[in-house]
Length: 61
Image (cartoon, rainbow, N blue to C red; front, top):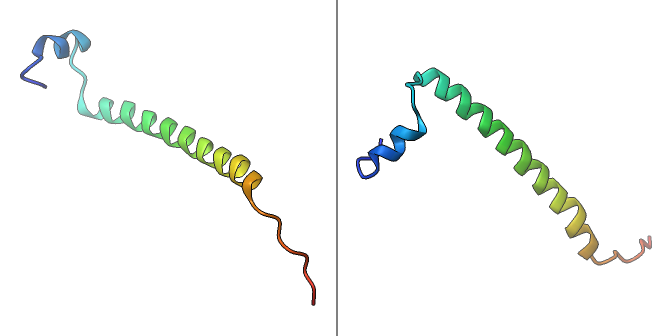
């Protein structure tokens, strides 16, 4: 808890929450953020970089 803003921290959490409950909440949020960031990264890589690639020269044996 921040000593500079004790009232703001107190207003945000009116009751006490145990540490395991916080871990569950945080782990769920981390999974969602990871899923969204993974999706966005794949979408940017797959759709933007492919458009800028130069065509390969034809294969001649």
